[in-house]
Amino acid sequence: MVTSRSRWRDNRDGSDDNLVWSSGEEGPTADRAMSEFGKALFLFLSALFPIVDPLGGSPIFLALTEGYSRDTRRALSRRIAFDSIYLLMGSYLIGSHVLAFFGISLPVVQISGGLVVTATGWTMLKQPDEIERSELKSSVQTPDPLRRAFYPLTLPLTVGPGSISVAITLGANGAHHDGIDAVAILAALVGALLLALSIYLCYGFADRVARILGPTATIVFTRLSAFLLLCIGVQIMWNGISGLVASIPAAR
Image 1 (tube, rainbow, N blue to C red):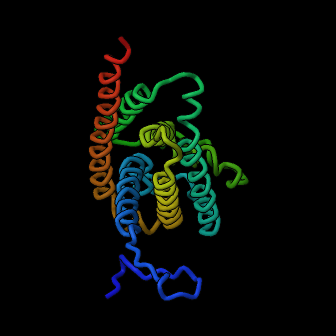
Image 2 (cartoon, rainbow, N blue to C red):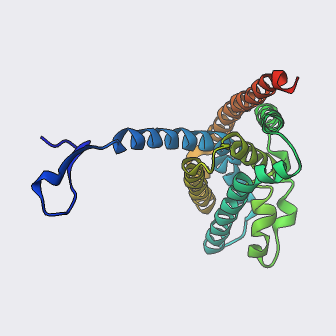
């Protein structure tokens, strides 16, 4: 019986003797690739979703775009989503290479990024109100709102320095010395697309999200996300410390 992991292969020379039984190894390889893809995608989303926080930012976005029509708010949301993809993927793909150009080692990037992530998570966990985002309200109201889609609505309201630092750290943390990790890059791209989709949905339908969640549920969701971000920052920092400790004997 021919199973899904094996097949008859014909050498195409017209002879029955040339029917060769081959055992396919694509199954385990595909399973391993899917497992790596799932882990990379989960890491990307779990690290960036709490700090991008489209649910937590939707009430702020709604306040900043008060008085705009529904179509204008949808257009802004779509532009912000695309700009977020460019920022996140650009930081993920070339951020570590820029750092390597300046001679900064990977463990140092991991420790520095982990510190930033940890500090950001701690700040989000302890800060009762999103003061920094609320301070942007006066700079958004312009006759042409689409001109302000990148700044300040995308940067720093949606994808701020913390998000960029996390994306650079993830790109450096997932880098391999034996070539390009296509699985990790694909997972990051899918994660960025999912984040962009969540940004568009939360911002474009911010009025409905605010009514569904309510102020109490929004605060609870933000606190849980901040604690998860704090744990991720500590883990990334620990990876960098382990790398530095392991490199000490080789430097002697």
